[in-house]
Image (cartoon, rainbow, N blue to C red):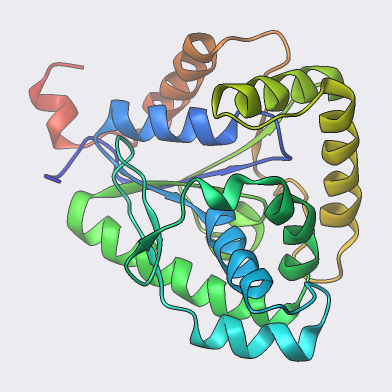
Amino acid sequence: MDAGDLRGVVALDGPSGTGKSTVARHLAGRLGASYLDTGAMYRAVTLATLRAGVAPDDEAGVIPIAEAVDLRMGTDPNHPAVHLGEEDVAAEIRGRAVTLAVSAVSAIPRVRELLKADQRKIIERECARTGGIVVEGRDIGTVVAPDAALKVFLTASSDARAQRRAHQDATEGRVSTVDDTRADVDRRDRLDSSRATAPLRAAEDAVRLDTTDLDLPAVLDRLLAIVDDRGLRGVAAERAGR
């Protein structure tokens, strides 16, 4: 990937179902930037944990798995990839088993420490390579990249988030109902917001954006306007006369 328009880090945080992944990928694509889904990293470690037959809340059992896992993350927003070794697990990590277990694995401090270090290495590498990166997760603006040039915290109503997640599941071939999905969303909110290490919360200087009544183009337009207001587009944008 050649150098793109974005200069620096855009940290995109928020709870499940707010559209983070879709928004982050499209924003990175529009800016010619790299993209990192940190939630997928926790899901991949969770998948490795489940495959090993270890309970997700067994801290002593999970830590050696997280320390040894061969996790490889793609950063192309048009073709995001998640591999355990040579195996593509991008679809499997979105399954119900991983969804139900990921909050417990994510709450383990050593797991967060390990993945935070990996995430920072990826961010540094990609900023040097392409100029900028859009990073999505739950603690990017507060923990992983507290000096990000732009921090955004997406929100949406519980009903809207449940509808979106159920639609995503159906599109990707997973069976779920809106009621079941709403229960999952609420459960993850409670777990992620109450964990002792890096709880889900907005950074003090984050831009809050409620996506309940906004479609993807509207969200992107608002974020691109903020990027421009912050002067985060580089020489590629200037050459294009933007």
